[in-house]
Length: 188
Image 1 (cartoon, helix red, strand yellow):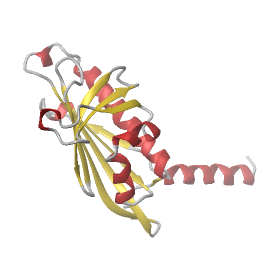
Image 2 (tube, one colour):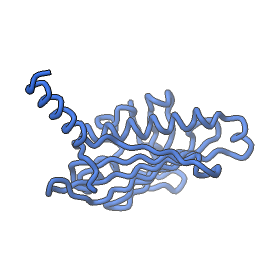
Image 3 (cartoon, one colour):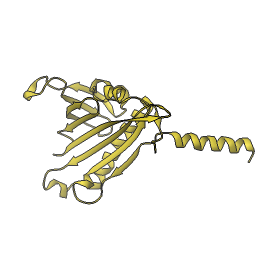
Image 4 (cartoon, rainbow, N blue to C red):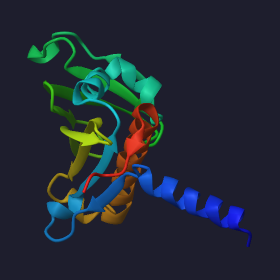
C-alpha cells in the first residue's frame, strides 16, 4: 500500500469519526422501559434553528423523509387550539395517524400519537440541549419514543416488531435532521 493510499484511508476514518452518527438504545427491563427507544444526535445548528423546524409540522415533509404529507386536523375541535392537532401520512408506518403537538420554547417538542396502530399510543419527546462543536453553536437532540398498548393487547402484539419499528422511525428522523443541519461528533 502506498503512503498516499494510507493517508487517504486515515483521512476517511477521521472524517467518519467526526460525523454525528445518531445513536440508539431501546429500554430493557420492565414492561414500561422495554417499550421505549431513545436516540441522540449532535447537530451543527442552534437550538432555536432546530426548534423552528421541529415545532412546525408543515415543514416536516421537506425535512423528514418518512413524512409524506401533513394536514392540520380540525381547527379548534374538541377544545384544541389551532396548530395542536395534525394528520401525518407516514411512509415508514404505511398509514396516517393523528398527533397532538405541544411546544415548550425553545427546548422541547412533544407529541402524543393517538392512533398509532391497533389501539396503541405513541409518546414522543424531542429535547433540544445547547452544546458547542469546534467553538460554534450546536444542539444535542435527545429523541425519546415510548409505546403504550392497552391492557391485554400487549400479550398478542409482537414486542420485537414494535421495537424495530420504533428504532427505524427514530433513526430515520435523526439521520434526516443530521442531513438537514449537519452533524458533529458528540462533545466529550
